[in-house]
Amino acid sequence: MALLPSLRTIITHFYRPTKPPPLLSSSSPFFPKKLSFLFPLSPKPQPLKPLASTRQETTFVSNNDERLVGLGSVNRGDPIQTQSSASTIAAIVTSLGGPPAAVGIVRMSGPTAVNIAGRVFFPAKNKRRFDSGSGSWRPTSHVVEYGVVLDSQGNVVDEVLAVPMLAPKSYTREDVVELQCHGSEVCLRRVLNACLEAGARLAEPGEFTLRAFLNGRLDLSQAENVGKLISAKSVAAADAALAGIQGGFSSLVRSLRGQCIELLTEIEARLDFEDEMPPLDFNLIMDSIHAMSQDVEHALETANYDKLLQSGLQIAIVGRPNVGKSSLLNAWSKSERAIVTEIAGTTRDVVEASVTVSGVPVTLLDTAGIRETDDVVEKIGVERSEAVAMGADVIIMTVSALDGWTMEDTKLLEWIQSNKRLTSIPMILVINKIDCALSACSDWVDREAKSFSKHVFTCAITGQGIQDLEKTIVEIVGLNQIPAGGRRWTVNQRQCEQLMRAKEALVRLKSSIKEELPLDFWTIDLKDAALALGQISGEDISEEILSNIFGKFCIGK
Image (cartoon, rainbow, N blue to C red; front, side, top):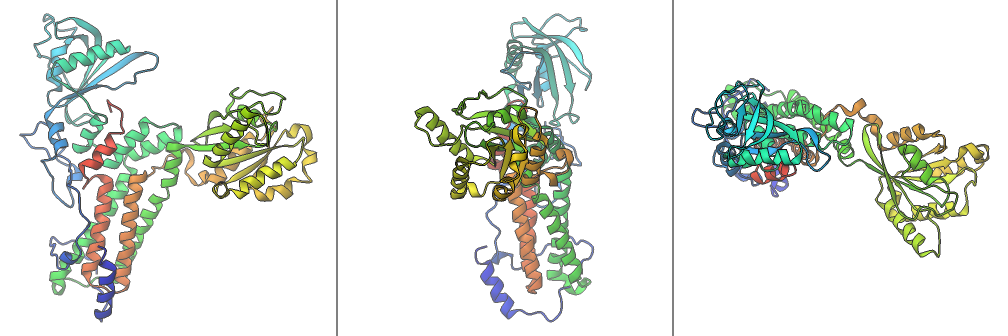
């Protein structure tokens, strides 16, 4: 691929067709390859494809799985697939570590999930004696049964509700059994141990969702959104993840990839059968490529919003001592996180509080008053304040309306402006304590506000101006350009990288068409775009990437 620009130049010089390239017609089954040996695609990792269902396989998969249609073939020798189709896994799927809940769930999935459940679960309606080894349970799918769980010695470990979900109507498209027991960690672990002793193995992180992906229940982008939904820190993040799970982004990727493959089919067919096919319409092809490029651009626009939803914003509240920074943090977070006194320099360390602005999680950082001091402890606090300011996404410089703009404020602003890292961070001027002397601000606010992105008047005691401050942050960060509630799907970093790859391939394709290069060049760029889009949906993905994605999930999901 490194030689591609040079070869483009050479062929452009010697090859000048006298007529425009031939028109988009119905799809063709022919796939000849002429110059492809000159332009090998980048080394492709060993593909990991969804399993296809057969009578011999124990994994239940839909025969109409759309992810099995497209470029490439299913590779049945992958370790992950072999392990997933042959074993039954079990895990606690409800959270542990906090206060005990009323109910907890142990989930099993795999070809022997029902048999294993039959060895440990005894339905109350069954008149047979407690025999943990009989395995004669014959459940009806999605019908809840009440009973008890027995350990390997036949002792009752808990009363449970068993929920069987037989393949393919389950999350993993395998046989799934959930045992709903009491929520204490002791009860959950005893039930899990009984399942493991009966033949299940402990699930790896994200393995239930991995099986859902391998069995065609979800594509890879939907699976990634499952992880986002579990870790969502705000309503907007949850809504965006749900939109991704419901297939909004997947549908777009599937459509774009289908268009690339259709156009690739048309072009490759004409390499050998040009005389037998109608001419290509240059303008129609360019319009199609332009539309695909626009769709990719719109998807890329959501990447920054995804970062905000996942990581949130950090806002540093800075200023000289005793201007009301701590009071502002308390009023904004509706808490008493910071100690407030009339003594200057009360705050000696960074105090954090969490709020939500337009669905985005925000961490407020109240810093020590920045000034020159001989106090050793206060000096450490000032240094930490400066470090926090350098790592923030937004800086709020607070001044007192009562004291007006002082020389200390000027020195602080000059320090911020002299730091190259801080000059790129948006700054908001907050004039606090307006209940004391609002009229006295008119002579200096307009002059000093020119150095800031926006300025806002607040009163931390009454909460006045807090909503205006939030609106200002929304405007500066660009949250006002996002659909209300964040209900549109977003793309993560991995998906963004592949979209960029597809975008660059489409740009090269436009260049090839405009420069009237041979059709072989068109196929190279179309293949690259299709492969990039396939990486997003999981059509052609390596085991290493899958392990990295699902390894971030919690055990039990």
